[in-house]
Amino acid sequence: REVDAKQAQARNEAQQRRLEDLTSDNSKLRIENTRLRSEAAGGRMEAFEKEILAEELRGAKDAVAGMEQQLQRLHAENAALRDGNTLSLELATVSNQLRGALDAKAALGAALQARLACSRAETASLHAALRQAEEQAEGA
Image 1 (cartoon, one colour):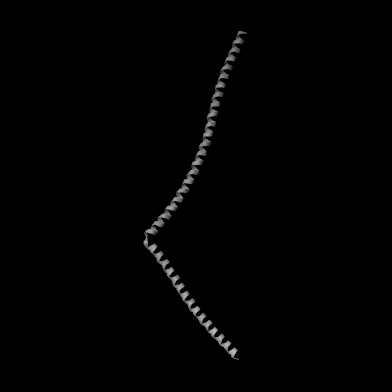
Image 2 (cartoon, helix red, strand yellow):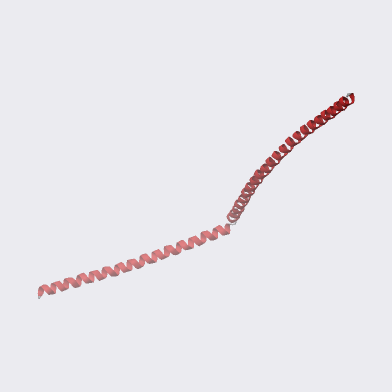
């Protein structure tokens, strides 16, 4: 009996140690599980942050491209303004077009005046012929 009791006590102690080991392992696994979940959440956050940064970078690149285009236009305008010949040629062309338009207007005005004079002369002739016809009609 004493042997059985010692064996039972030894089994109990072994089971107790085994229970303590399993409890310790369980605690370690829970800690590891918590750490892994934290890392996974951190990874998701990191991916989200990378996505946001990539979006901001795309926006910045688009803004830079727009600014570069605007800068190129400004350089071209500046070069055109510095090149006095370009501006002078444009002004000369516009002046020539304006002179041509004024000459055409003057010619049209002269033609209309001539046509008006002809119309007045025709009207005067018609009035004279009408009076003459009336006088002949009254005399007859």
